[in-house]
Image (tube, rainbow, N blue to C red; front, side, top):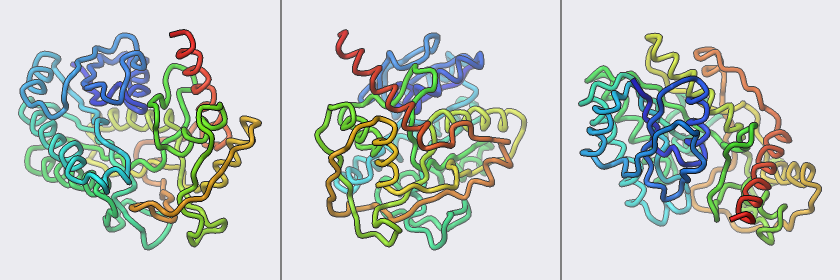
Length: 330
Protein backbone atom coordinates (compact mmCIF):
# COMPACT_ATOMS: atom_id res chain seq x y z
CA UNK A 1 0.00 0.00 0.00
CA UNK A 2 1.16 3.54 -0.65
CA UNK A 3 0.41 7.20 -0.02
CA UNK A 4 -0.12 9.41 -3.07
CA UNK A 5 1.04 13.01 -2.56
CA UNK A 6 -0.15 15.43 -5.23
CA UNK A 7 2.04 18.50 -5.52
CA UNK A 8 4.80 16.74 -3.61
CA UNK A 9 7.53 18.88 -5.17
CA UNK A 10 6.08 22.08 -3.72
CA UNK A 11 6.67 23.97 -0.51
CA UNK A 12 4.36 22.02 1.81
CA UNK A 13 4.16 18.85 -0.26
CA UNK A 14 7.93 18.33 -0.30
CA UNK A 15 8.07 18.69 3.48
CA UNK A 16 5.29 16.10 3.64
CA UNK A 17 7.32 13.61 1.59
CA UNK A 18 10.18 13.83 4.09
CA UNK A 19 7.83 13.25 7.01
CA UNK A 20 6.19 10.27 5.32
CA UNK A 21 9.49 8.64 4.36
CA UNK A 22 10.72 9.20 7.92
CA UNK A 23 7.58 7.31 9.05
CA UNK A 24 8.42 4.37 6.80
CA UNK A 25 5.59 4.97 4.32
CA UNK A 26 5.76 4.07 0.64
CA UNK A 27 5.40 7.48 -1.04
CA UNK A 28 4.32 8.22 -4.61
CA UNK A 29 4.36 11.85 -5.79
CA UNK A 30 2.33 13.22 -8.69
CA UNK A 31 3.53 16.68 -9.72
CA UNK A 32 3.84 18.52 -13.02
CA UNK A 33 6.81 20.47 -11.54
CA UNK A 34 5.37 23.77 -12.78
CA UNK A 35 6.17 25.30 -9.38
CA UNK A 36 7.75 22.36 -7.55
CA UNK A 37 11.19 20.76 -7.57
CA UNK A 38 12.27 17.15 -7.77
CA UNK A 39 15.32 17.83 -5.59
CA UNK A 40 13.09 19.11 -2.77
CA UNK A 41 11.39 15.72 -2.33
CA UNK A 42 12.57 13.07 0.09
CA UNK A 43 14.96 10.46 -1.27
CA UNK A 44 12.95 7.29 -1.54
CA UNK A 45 9.77 8.98 -2.74
CA UNK A 46 8.78 7.97 -6.27
CA UNK A 47 8.07 10.88 -8.61
CA UNK A 48 5.61 10.64 -11.46
CA UNK A 49 5.53 13.80 -13.58
CA UNK A 50 2.01 14.52 -14.74
CA UNK A 51 -1.23 16.42 -14.34
CA UNK A 52 -3.45 15.83 -11.32
CA UNK A 53 -6.46 16.13 -13.61
CA UNK A 54 -5.34 13.33 -15.95
CA UNK A 55 -7.84 10.60 -15.13
CA UNK A 56 -6.14 7.88 -17.16
CA UNK A 57 -2.86 8.55 -15.37
CA UNK A 58 -4.57 8.70 -11.98
CA UNK A 59 -6.24 5.34 -12.51
CA UNK A 60 -2.95 3.77 -13.56
CA UNK A 61 -1.08 5.14 -10.54
CA UNK A 62 -3.73 4.16 -8.02
CA UNK A 63 -4.04 0.63 -9.36
CA UNK A 64 -0.37 -0.13 -9.89
CA UNK A 65 0.87 1.47 -6.64
CA UNK A 66 -2.05 0.21 -4.54
CA UNK A 67 -2.77 3.70 -3.21
CA UNK A 68 -4.48 3.61 0.19
CA UNK A 69 -4.35 7.33 1.06
CA UNK A 70 -4.32 10.52 -1.01
CA UNK A 71 -2.81 13.75 0.31
CA UNK A 72 -3.94 16.48 -2.06
CA UNK A 73 -1.64 19.53 -2.07
CA UNK A 74 -1.58 20.36 -5.79
CA UNK A 75 -3.27 23.60 -6.77
CA UNK A 76 -2.96 27.34 -7.34
CA UNK A 77 -2.74 29.51 -4.24
CA UNK A 78 -2.33 33.24 -5.01
CA UNK A 79 -5.42 35.26 -4.03
CA UNK A 80 -4.91 38.31 -6.32
CA UNK A 81 -4.03 36.01 -9.23
CA UNK A 82 -7.28 34.13 -8.68
CA UNK A 83 -9.22 37.41 -8.91
CA UNK A 84 -7.54 38.12 -12.27
CA UNK A 85 -7.93 34.54 -13.57
CA UNK A 86 -10.94 32.95 -11.87
CA UNK A 87 -11.57 30.31 -14.53
CA UNK A 88 -7.96 29.16 -14.32
CA UNK A 89 -8.39 28.67 -10.58
CA UNK A 90 -11.68 26.81 -10.91
CA UNK A 91 -10.04 24.51 -13.44
CA UNK A 92 -6.88 23.84 -11.46
CA UNK A 93 -8.36 23.73 -7.97
CA UNK A 94 -11.89 22.43 -8.49
CA UNK A 95 -12.28 20.59 -11.80
CA UNK A 96 -9.01 18.69 -11.41
CA UNK A 97 -9.80 17.92 -7.78
CA UNK A 98 -13.06 16.38 -8.97
CA UNK A 99 -11.08 14.04 -11.24
CA UNK A 100 -8.78 13.08 -8.36
CA UNK A 101 -11.72 12.37 -6.03
CA UNK A 102 -13.48 10.32 -8.71
CA UNK A 103 -10.33 8.29 -9.35
CA UNK A 104 -9.88 7.67 -5.63
CA UNK A 105 -13.43 6.33 -5.35
CA UNK A 106 -13.17 4.19 -8.48
CA UNK A 107 -9.92 2.64 -7.27
CA UNK A 108 -11.03 1.93 -3.69
CA UNK A 109 -8.74 4.46 -2.03
CA UNK A 110 -9.70 4.49 1.65
CA UNK A 111 -8.54 7.89 2.88
CA UNK A 112 -8.33 11.42 1.47
CA UNK A 113 -6.70 14.41 3.21
CA UNK A 114 -7.34 17.74 1.52
CA UNK A 115 -5.28 20.92 1.65
CA UNK A 116 -7.86 23.68 2.11
CA UNK A 117 -7.56 27.26 3.35
CA UNK A 118 -8.88 29.82 5.81
CA UNK A 119 -9.86 31.84 2.71
CA UNK A 120 -13.08 29.80 2.63
CA UNK A 121 -14.37 31.92 5.54
CA UNK A 122 -14.06 35.31 3.85
CA UNK A 123 -14.40 37.99 6.52
CA UNK A 124 -15.52 36.13 9.65
CA UNK A 125 -18.11 37.72 11.93
CA UNK A 126 -16.07 36.84 15.03
CA UNK A 127 -12.48 35.96 15.81
CA UNK A 128 -10.98 33.52 16.34
CA UNK A 129 -12.90 31.76 13.59
CA UNK A 130 -14.31 28.31 14.33
CA UNK A 131 -14.74 25.49 11.82
CA UNK A 132 -18.53 25.77 11.88
CA UNK A 133 -18.48 29.46 10.89
CA UNK A 134 -20.33 30.26 7.63
CA UNK A 135 -18.29 29.96 4.46
CA UNK A 136 -18.23 33.19 2.48
CA UNK A 137 -15.05 33.27 0.36
CA UNK A 138 -14.06 36.65 -1.08
CA UNK A 139 -11.87 35.33 -3.90
CA UNK A 140 -12.03 32.62 -6.56
CA UNK A 141 -9.16 30.95 -4.70
CA UNK A 142 -11.24 30.59 -1.56
CA UNK A 143 -14.35 29.65 -3.54
CA UNK A 144 -12.49 26.97 -5.49
CA UNK A 145 -11.34 25.35 -2.24
CA UNK A 146 -14.82 25.58 -0.69
CA UNK A 147 -16.25 23.80 -3.73
CA UNK A 148 -13.77 20.96 -3.33
CA UNK A 149 -14.63 20.69 0.36
CA UNK A 150 -18.29 20.27 -0.60
CA UNK A 151 -17.45 17.62 -3.19
CA UNK A 152 -15.52 15.66 -0.59
CA UNK A 153 -18.37 15.86 1.93
CA UNK A 154 -20.86 14.64 -0.68
CA UNK A 155 -18.50 11.89 -1.87
CA UNK A 156 -18.04 10.70 1.69
CA UNK A 157 -21.79 10.38 2.20
CA UNK A 158 -22.42 8.71 -1.15
CA UNK A 159 -19.40 6.45 -1.50
CA UNK A 160 -17.83 6.07 1.94
CA UNK A 161 -14.57 7.87 1.17
CA UNK A 162 -13.02 8.82 4.53
CA UNK A 163 -11.86 12.43 4.57
CA UNK A 164 -10.05 15.05 6.59
CA UNK A 165 -10.13 18.66 5.39
CA UNK A 166 -7.37 20.85 6.80
CA UNK A 167 -7.96 24.58 6.51
CA UNK A 168 -4.53 26.22 6.50
CA UNK A 169 -3.98 29.64 7.94
CA UNK A 170 -0.66 31.31 6.96
CA UNK A 171 2.03 28.69 6.42
CA UNK A 172 5.59 29.85 7.05
CA UNK A 173 9.06 28.66 8.02
CA UNK A 174 11.06 25.77 6.60
CA UNK A 175 12.15 22.25 7.49
CA UNK A 176 13.99 22.45 10.84
CA UNK A 177 16.45 19.88 9.44
CA UNK A 178 17.21 22.12 6.47
CA UNK A 179 16.05 19.71 3.78
CA UNK A 180 13.39 21.82 2.07
CA UNK A 181 11.47 25.07 2.28
CA UNK A 182 9.81 27.78 0.18
CA UNK A 183 11.90 27.71 -3.00
CA UNK A 184 9.78 29.31 -5.72
CA UNK A 185 11.33 32.37 -7.35
CA UNK A 186 9.02 35.36 -7.28
CA UNK A 187 6.85 33.86 -4.54
CA UNK A 188 4.29 36.21 -3.03
CA UNK A 189 4.30 34.90 0.57
CA UNK A 190 5.07 37.84 2.86
CA UNK A 191 7.76 36.08 4.86
CA UNK A 192 9.48 34.79 1.71
CA UNK A 193 9.51 38.30 0.23
CA UNK A 194 10.86 39.81 3.45
CA UNK A 195 13.59 37.18 3.70
CA UNK A 196 14.61 37.86 0.10
CA UNK A 197 14.90 41.55 0.96
CA UNK A 198 16.96 40.71 4.06
CA UNK A 199 19.32 38.59 1.91
CA UNK A 200 19.72 41.25 -0.79
CA UNK A 201 17.63 39.56 -3.50
CA UNK A 202 14.90 42.21 -3.55
CA UNK A 203 15.13 45.90 -2.79
CA UNK A 204 11.94 46.35 -0.79
CA UNK A 205 8.91 44.68 0.73
CA UNK A 206 5.44 46.05 -0.04
CA UNK A 207 2.78 46.27 2.65
CA UNK A 208 -0.64 45.99 1.02
CA UNK A 209 -2.99 48.01 3.19
CA UNK A 210 -2.06 50.20 6.15
CA UNK A 211 -5.56 51.45 6.93
CA UNK A 212 -7.23 48.30 8.25
CA UNK A 213 -9.10 48.43 11.56
CA UNK A 214 -6.24 46.79 13.43
CA UNK A 215 -3.86 48.14 16.09
CA UNK A 216 -1.17 49.18 13.57
CA UNK A 217 -3.36 49.40 10.46
CA UNK A 218 -1.91 46.32 8.76
CA UNK A 219 -3.49 42.92 8.26
CA UNK A 220 -3.25 40.31 11.01
CA UNK A 221 -2.62 36.64 10.24
CA UNK A 222 -2.13 33.40 12.15
CA UNK A 223 1.26 32.02 11.05
CA UNK A 224 1.79 28.26 11.37
CA UNK A 225 5.16 26.58 10.95
CA UNK A 226 5.22 24.24 7.96
CA UNK A 227 6.63 21.38 10.07
CA UNK A 228 3.73 21.61 12.52
CA UNK A 229 1.29 21.68 9.60
CA UNK A 230 2.83 18.60 8.01
CA UNK A 231 2.67 16.73 11.30
CA UNK A 232 -1.06 17.51 11.41
CA UNK A 233 -1.40 15.67 8.07
CA UNK A 234 0.42 12.63 9.42
CA UNK A 235 -1.83 12.59 12.46
CA UNK A 236 -4.85 12.95 10.16
CA UNK A 237 -3.74 9.81 8.31
CA UNK A 238 -3.44 7.95 11.61
CA UNK A 239 -6.90 9.18 12.62
CA UNK A 240 -8.50 7.86 9.44
CA UNK A 241 -6.62 4.57 9.51
CA UNK A 242 -7.84 4.10 13.07
CA UNK A 243 -11.45 4.35 11.91
CA UNK A 244 -11.92 7.98 12.91
CA UNK A 245 -14.78 10.06 11.60
CA UNK A 246 -14.54 12.66 8.83
CA UNK A 247 -13.10 15.94 10.08
CA UNK A 248 -12.81 19.58 9.08
CA UNK A 249 -10.02 21.26 11.05
CA UNK A 250 -8.38 24.66 11.25
CA UNK A 251 -4.59 24.58 11.10
CA UNK A 252 -3.28 27.56 13.03
CA UNK A 253 -2.00 28.49 16.47
CA UNK A 254 -4.79 30.82 17.57
CA UNK A 255 -2.45 33.80 17.73
CA UNK A 256 -2.23 36.58 15.15
CA UNK A 257 0.66 38.80 14.09
CA UNK A 258 0.30 41.92 12.00
CA UNK A 259 2.28 42.46 8.81
CA UNK A 260 4.49 44.97 10.61
CA UNK A 261 5.03 42.60 13.55
CA UNK A 262 6.20 39.89 11.18
CA UNK A 263 8.54 42.32 9.41
CA UNK A 264 9.89 43.42 12.79
CA UNK A 265 10.68 39.77 13.53
CA UNK A 266 12.54 39.45 10.22
CA UNK A 267 14.60 42.55 11.02
CA UNK A 268 15.28 41.28 14.55
CA UNK A 269 16.36 37.80 13.48
CA UNK A 270 18.32 38.81 10.37
CA UNK A 271 19.90 41.95 11.81
CA UNK A 272 18.95 43.79 8.62
CA UNK A 273 16.82 46.90 8.18
CA UNK A 274 14.14 46.35 5.53
CA UNK A 275 12.90 48.93 3.04
CA UNK A 276 9.16 48.74 3.80
CA UNK A 277 6.82 50.48 1.36
CA UNK A 278 3.06 50.93 1.91
CA UNK A 279 0.72 50.07 -0.93
CA UNK A 280 -3.04 49.98 -1.49
CA UNK A 281 -5.08 47.03 -0.31
CA UNK A 282 -5.28 43.99 -2.59
CA UNK A 283 -8.54 42.50 -3.82
CA UNK A 284 -9.62 39.48 -1.80
CA UNK A 285 -7.58 40.26 1.34
CA UNK A 286 -9.24 40.47 4.77
CA UNK A 287 -8.19 42.59 7.74
CA UNK A 288 -7.79 39.80 10.30
CA UNK A 289 -7.75 36.01 10.21
CA UNK A 290 -6.97 34.00 13.33
CA UNK A 291 -7.82 30.34 13.90
CA UNK A 292 -9.77 28.75 16.68
CA UNK A 293 -7.42 25.79 17.06
CA UNK A 294 -8.99 23.78 19.87
CA UNK A 295 -10.57 21.14 17.65
CA UNK A 296 -7.35 20.00 15.96
CA UNK A 297 -5.58 19.76 19.31
CA UNK A 298 -8.37 17.66 20.79
CA UNK A 299 -9.26 15.36 17.90
CA UNK A 300 -5.75 14.67 16.56
CA UNK A 301 -3.88 15.19 19.84
CA UNK A 302 -1.82 17.71 17.90
CA UNK A 303 0.62 19.85 19.86
CA UNK A 304 2.67 22.51 18.04
CA UNK A 305 6.44 22.34 18.39
CA UNK A 306 7.41 25.59 16.64
CA UNK A 307 4.85 28.13 17.86
CA UNK A 308 7.31 31.02 17.99
CA UNK A 309 7.48 33.74 15.35
CA UNK A 310 11.25 34.16 15.74
CA UNK A 311 11.82 30.41 15.28
CA UNK A 312 9.64 30.47 12.16
CA UNK A 313 11.73 33.34 10.77
CA UNK A 314 15.02 31.65 11.77
CA UNK A 315 14.14 28.50 9.84
CA UNK A 316 12.99 30.47 6.79
CA UNK A 317 16.19 32.53 6.81
CA UNK A 318 18.37 29.44 7.17
CA UNK A 319 16.62 27.84 4.21
CA UNK A 320 17.03 30.97 2.08
CA UNK A 321 20.77 30.96 2.77
CA UNK A 322 20.86 27.30 1.73
CA UNK A 323 19.11 28.19 -1.52
CA UNK A 324 21.61 30.95 -2.22
CA UNK A 325 24.49 28.50 -1.78
CA UNK A 326 22.77 26.02 -4.13
CA UNK A 327 22.46 28.71 -6.80
CA UNK A 328 26.04 29.83 -6.41
CA UNK A 329 27.24 26.24 -6.79
CA UNK A 330 25.09 25.59 -9.89
